[in-house]
Image (cartoon, rainbow, N blue to C red; front, side, top):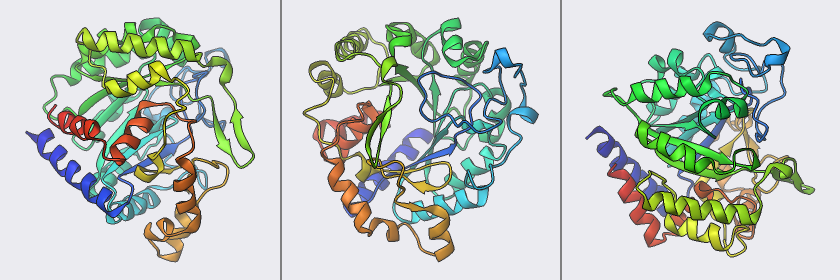
Length: 374
């Protein structure tokens, strides 16, 4: 019943945000630091200390494990929002009508204050989601338990194959032990698994789906992002690792078959059909920036069409004593919303399906209601 009450409140807040024409999700990249070394990642910071907490750089002698090594920093001064700045942002987001907070990275559990940050989001009245590679969950979970509404575990393959992709030997075993133990927890959050698809893990959905089922988790998959839009145009940084359009269509077909076989893939049939027939999304019109407000580690409000040119800075708004309404009213923000409708760079189901939900497509509204009942 706890999940049902929380979901009912969340759906109510989503509806109010939509009526006001305001975003309903705050996506906060808490840190760019990470203890993994995924070849597909665009977000891992190159800052010193980013490999702390696990043997991601095994050939370079980085084998420190444990909170004292892995979470020694509360925030990198200037490069990351402090605990107080994050709490200010979350309070202002809730005041502006935003309903949901998603905290990710990098690896957010590397922040020594991640428990305080999560609690700040929950106390502001936001539904809190946390995305993690899971390496530090065993030792950090007690301070997060009961405050996280949705826990999303990154899982790109199974067993040693996953460990090799993440450059974290033993990671899969940690995830498996934690997720199976979580099933017995009366304060268990909604558990999701996210699988990033690339040429490095072809066919991974077939291997990961039974694991998600055993963990009692919903399963999402995302075609890997290969680059980002900047003021000078699209910068392709990882294109050589991406699946081809034909392979994306094959992945969509496999996902449909797995759904029909009873595995817990959560992408809508409409998204899978779109990815199958139009993997480059030429027929798709994006509304995601209307629903999702993105903030980077240093507190920049991200313009998804010009990621090197922030819309504004959290610290500047805080210093001026203004809330998020000041951002929403700027010509630059409004122009981004209009221009994004012609963009098809993002092909992930969370972006596409959020756009459909924003447009009040009936099948997406039914989908939201069905998820609330789980």
